[in-house]
Each structure stands twice: as C-alpha cells, then as structure tokens.
Length: 325
Image (cartoon, rainbow, N blue to C red; front, side):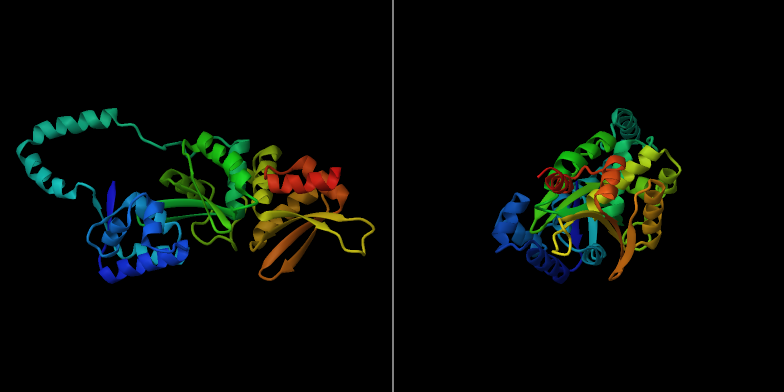
C-alpha cells in the first residue's frame, strides 16, 4: 500500500481542517472512529509526524468537492509503504541480481490482477443501464494515479436503488464491489478503477470531470438495438428523472407527469428524438441553466412505462401509488 505525504505541514493541517468541516465531525476522536483508528493517530497525520495510508486518504478525499480534491492532490507525494526497505533492497539486488530476476519472473507468472475486466465487454442490458446512470448522476475523473468513478443520489430516496440495483450490476460486470457511503442528504457509489475510467472515457467518450453541458448517449449505444437504447434511457431516468403528481384544483383529478432534466442540449435532443419515435408525446422547456423533457398525461406515461420503465424504487412506488390507489 502507498503512503501519502504532504510536502508542507500547513497544507496538511488545512486538509484535515476542511475534512472535519465537510464530514461534520465534532472532534478528531470522531474522525478517528470513522477511519478505524484513534485520536492520537489522527494527530500524527495532521502534524505530519507520520504518513497517511492511501486507503484512509481516499476515504477522506471522497468527502471533498472536486475542485478541493484537485487542489490537495497537487500538494502530496506518494511512497511505497516499505520505501525504507526498498533502499536497502537496491543494494542487495546489485549483489544478487540473478536470483532476484528469477524470483521476479516466478512472481509475475503467478500474479493475478484484481478487479480486472475487459473494457470491450459486449453491450448488455446491465451495461447500458449503468452507462445511463453515469450519464444521469455520475462522473469519472483522474487524480494523479487515482481513477475514480462516482454516482450520487438522495440518501433517503435512492438507497434501495444503489444497494440492490447498481451495486450488483457493478459486481457482475466489472468484478468490483463498489464503496457506498451515506452522509447527510447524499448517497455515493464510488469505484476506483483505471479500467472503468478508460472504458467510460475512451470507449464510450463520456467526458472526464464536469460533463453536464456536453454529455450525450454514446454512438455505440445509439447504433445498437432498440432494447439496449431503452435500458440506457432507464438508467438516465432512474437517476436524473422524476415522477410528479400535480394536484392543483384546475385539474378534475390529480395529473401525472414524468420529467428528465439536463444541461446538455445534445442529450435532450437525443432523448426527445427517441421518445417521438416511440410515439411518446412530450414537451421541452428551459428551467434555469437546464432543459427539461416533460411527459404529460396518463396515456404518454403508460407508453413510457411500457417501453422504457424504471428500476429505481422511488419512481416505481410513486407510479404504483398513483395508478392503484
């Protein structure tokens, strides 16, 4: 495991101060409990007396906004956990080079790559639904040697969807059990994988970092079967969509609608075109910096459910309550 070093003690102290505010911990003892350690160890990390294990540093980093992550990642160095031993090892290697090389070859032959998968795995319903969730509420980025993919939702309303739908998809497709954290009003699914980062950015051309204004449904999916396009839309509506019940007195009875919101004009145009091809009538209007697709009325909502539907329980429950109560 790598160890994290802040070059300057002031930066280290600043990092931990921001972490404490972001994680809303009362004291350093509480932060230690979260990391599975004690107050004395946190003090040692803060005062730069000892380095920070990379796994604990990643947990802390997850709690900062992207711009602050980038800021602090420029202020650190990394070293191997046994870097002191490595120095002595170099001397031993120069003396016993032949034996070391034989050992390396044996180790390389027996080494198994953990969390490895083929980034060119075939399109499937599950993969397209995952891509849809990334398009909706996800992002991926590279921070130094750290590759992160994250999907963010509502802690209360989306917990079932994240744990019972998205997590099993990740485990099945990518051989990865994602880290799911719930804090305040948010639930976050995190995957640290270079393979996944490269699949999203290189194969599917999903922009790294801020993607809201430029993301679109990947051409590979648009050119695929209708069924796979529908599963992509399902992932998108599960994350960035919503179901509304209008109970204004101007309606004889409550009025149902489904909406999808995005800042990407290209994405909204794609979705609108697909919905029209399915004879799902809808409107498109501006709401602040975003565009909103609105599917109005029982007939159009039923067409949407029949053709695309939802996996997210928060939407399914609202629709079922409206239809059957």
